[in-house]
Image: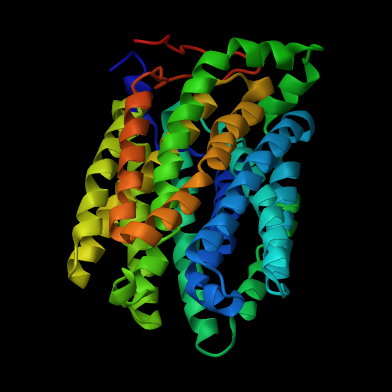
Length: 426
């Protein structure tokens, strides 16, 4: 523990201001609806494979294309958010992924679907770092981990909602209407633009900006930026490799290496997976990180995720599959909260959104190889064995995570610095 422990222990959640609560709601809704739109593809993947005659490798490529586009979107929106504002770019990213998801439903070929998925990825990449930066610059250090944990946990709610909506729509209509439902998040933009203000910290930093300071700040931060990007890359490879293919893994017949779940069983499974596994994983990370430290929680989660994946892959009974999937989801998704907390506390205000965009979305772009890799491996060895690549990736992320500095108790200040950031090895 360090000398900031007392502030962590005494902060009262009810002391948050209305503006702080609105910021968490705005970022949380954006991330929840991002998950809703993005994961619709995975839920209807087996239907799309039949409709377009796609192989597993092609299906994996389309999801990889979305992830690669998210890297570009994260970089683009990060730079724009540092220059023009967090709220404005959060709204723009939500509009882009909403309209692009709707357009997926109009696709008549694999090429058209690929273009829509690419555009969706641009908005997806922009939403995360703009929302996380908005929260980090609005909340105090004592509660920043829990605030970002709430935001990250909304991904699980969005994923579960996509499973419910897709299941209901597919029972009465075709897959196109599933994507048409993806336009709904656009409505949230109206509320964000009216009710959420830009952080005063960013406003002060913009007014005090010195020409060339962004480039100099990025050079000074390149060491921790490279380490965080590498840890995120391995962790995201594990996540996207596993959770892109879990719906198909469950839905495919046993003769094709799956578990033979019907649509009703699959929908129920995914709802439980998200609400019992992912949601508390995100939330508890914030609590643990605020109490014991960011790096310890980050590495611990990744080690547990690496151990849980083989248990999931070897399970045959539905109850055991659900239990081990929830454990893998708890730890394998909860570590994302740590990425947002550590990144927001490592980097100075004038490059915070840009650096978060690099560390998170470049990693997500590189991890776009995961769906293709798992799909290709499954063609030869089956999905159960292919998931071993995800376990190895989680383990590699834990090793790299040990190199991260501890940032517990760091205060963000308006002159572009971050106080009390330890050096490597602290």
